Image (cartoon, rainbow, N blue to C red):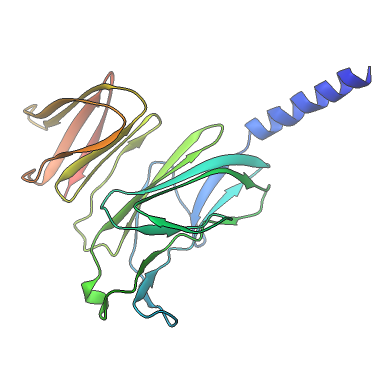
Length: 224
């Protein structure tokens, strides 16, 4: 009887955890899943010199939950994220099995740090990072730091990740498939087989709206 009660309690606890709502915040602003956001506040690093861009990102869950967090800088710069553990500085930082406590914000301690420049005008523009939060559901957010107004609207879907930055179409796929990119007139500008993480060079892609198709799914990017 006791074993049965314990099993019932465990199943109920799992069901509650499965219903957890997880959100990302930038400061006090709650971000929308699949949304693209800009952050342009730059501060001087008083200790090491140079500059820091800190958008004050955090995660908040309605229930205790465990997630994997990936921050991938699609524009190629090194970004830093700690997320409750050891800080890592790389173009892609992944943190696995991160525990979220119910109604307690977890500070991701995400930053872009550049100690090699003397003037903030020398910082790279449009530092673009795609965040993927893997829990009971998968959430995605795109952050463009130090935007010059020519940023890219990135559409991120549940099972794939497509962005356009610095003349490259960047993808992050769970399986091999065909990627087709068309302009609004239906003209095919790209048709290729893709898998895993990678990119395709499209340096002369004109401004406008493009429709991509991956397998049976479709989305769009806006080049500005």
